[in-house]
Image (cartoon, rainbow, N blue to C red):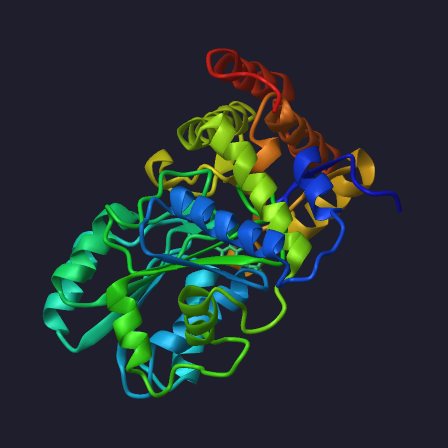
Amino acid sequence: MKAPDFTLTAGPTPASARTLNALGSQLVYHLDPTFIETFRRTTEKAQAFFRTTNDMLLLQGEGILGLEGAARSLTRPGMHVLNLVQGIYGKGMGQWLESYGCVLHEIEVAYDSAVDPDDVDAYLTAHPEIELVTIVHSETPSGTLSDCSRLGPIARRHGALTLVDALSSIGGSPFEADAWELDVCISGGQKCLGGPVGITMASVSPAAWERILSNENAPRYSYLSLIDWKVAWLENGTFPFTPSVTDVMGLEAALDAMLEEGIENSIARHAHAAAVTRAGVRAMGLELWPVSDEISGNPITAVRVPDGIVHTELSAHIRERYGVMLSTGSSAGNIIHIAHMGPTATGLYPIVGLTALGSGLRDLGVDVDLGAGVEAAMAVLSAGPVGAR
Ligand SMILES: *Cc1c(COP(=O)(O)O)cnc(C)c1O
């Protein structure tokens, strides 16, 4: 089977030629002064994307490494943690927390909805023993956002730290680690940045460091250890082990491209691609998965698959017949995605996704108005910032 003509998935997402070139760079010794300088610059650029002056770590594995390392570092057996669940990544965090022996509190809503910050406020008032709140900002498989601008200050007011999964947020959605008072934030390269898969960015507040350093259960001398990176990189300008040198170069190239575009412009581009896609989905006669546009994320448009059709069979059909790879909601629900992240959050990419989805559904006997979908999407598209990247 040949590679897809278009990859419009929940990540990895296509990368720009500039990023691909950087990923193909010659390998250098990780302690060569040029690489140490690259590493330093890349952490500083990542801080700009998180809108933080907190310490930034670049961990050498995909997003899960950062999330697991942070969760392990911040918790101990018997500790009360409030986990907010509005999708499968939130659910998975709860499974980790339970396996670490934490006392798990959860506020869980249907996976097409978002947790109400007022409910979190009330829960924390009733449970002052809670020391940490774990949040997924952008639940990629369900295409929903949580309101971290309110959740961060609420948690801090109650004396709880926050751990935020911002994997698909950075570069595509407004995200303000400092203004929103978020303690540990984790993101990755392969979502809205259109960068490499194998790297995690992790910002850590002073309060979080205090907790981590005094936590006997925080991993040390371990691949999962944030402390090792603090001691090696932040305090001594060296590494606990060999970083993935070309991934760091690829990440820097992806960050550079967006810094030159302007982070605000990049976010606006993602928001516009999402608006184009939503208009097309609706006009075709299909239903969006999130209950409202207000909680719909910029990186991905999650579409409810009509009854009688299974999301994985639909995406397999579209991939085979039209050469377009669309991801699905996996266990979040009977969902198919048109993702618009990184280089695909522009121009006619959403139209490709819409025509592939509409045609695929038609092939399977669903009555969709493909023409109306394309017309509606084009009307929104031509009213906004159009242009190739
Ligand atoms: C992609 C993603 C992750 C990380 O998953 P990987 O297996 O590293 O790709 C975690 N959380 C969210 C919300 C994501 O979108």
